[in-house]
Image (cartoon, rainbow, N blue to C red; front, side, top):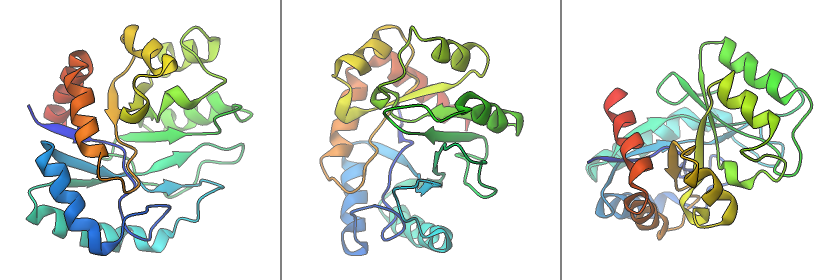
Length: 215
């Protein structure tokens, strides 16, 4: 089955990626060796803690796609949209023109968080909650999560590097995880870790394989 990483920060000098242009091809080889043939670049957008160079996203993606293609990697442009108390930005990049990968503050939910997600949903997008295991204010038993799942139909992503934490395990054992991803900012060990984590979680592995077939 084909593998995909839907969450990475590997476009050099665009956001807080630690990967250089010099080492980019090596990273793509590492993905290919791990059996991951599909890779989404998801630069931060609207994150108050990250200086994302919006004007560099598209040209750097074009450059990266050409490099990745030579290593046998299919690439896609998305983003990681940070939800704040303000308005949703006018410009962002949905994954596959349909899915919006969303993150927010790990210690508290911004005011009107659910309303912000509803605005995204009302625009016709599906919502993926990035690294859900990080949010200290959210858990599968909470009313907020119930609304997110039952009303908004959100999809859930966890990071491979934290898949064995108690919080991630709670979502996994309940069958609530739709994606496991790397959230890779430039670490060469993460593609292999992602592949191994998926292999040990066949239910999520199958969900993601079905997802690849649908895009």
